[in-house]
View: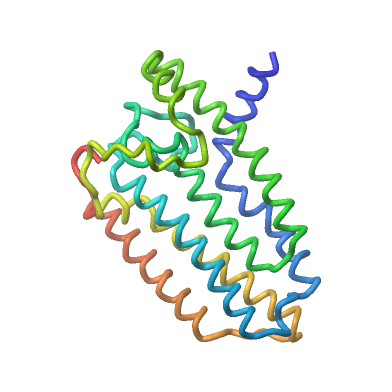
Length: 244
């Protein structure tokens, strides 16, 4: 059946979803090689770059708000297979079924938009829809099989991807900063590195030589410092929270 095929594809993509950014590198370089249309209007380009950063930060905030209230065994970065010790239906999961994927979408959309390429942005939208549609289908099939009527009742009244904030129900679990720091440091570094990569490669094509802008280098330095610090604390179990 087609549904079985899509679920099988979704499970395979779920296990390899960390490689999606690598698939975009060639397209990023191709888009940047055509030049940046806004480079003639410095003020407009600064505003546009600020918009891209704001979109990415919004996506990161959505991930933080989701992960900060998630219990152990849910909303993780596991790649071996689907895991859900319980069904999340409060907090961000009360307004949409896949808040982490919306957060990912906004973070990567900000990187794609920074290239100032309309065709690359369009290609990314199509790729992301096809890629994550199958992952969400496989994930929901797993949840339906495990939680039965409870999942059906929640899914039938909760949007899949586009949030409906009037449905908001406060989370059952308190905000945990340690959980956020333990789970999200790698995603934060990945986003910053991607933004810096677009800026550096774009300037290389535009000016013919390597140009390292102070603001982006500071952002990269801070991100790397946080990554090393938080990874070390995680290895030492300093960020562990009971039940989270």
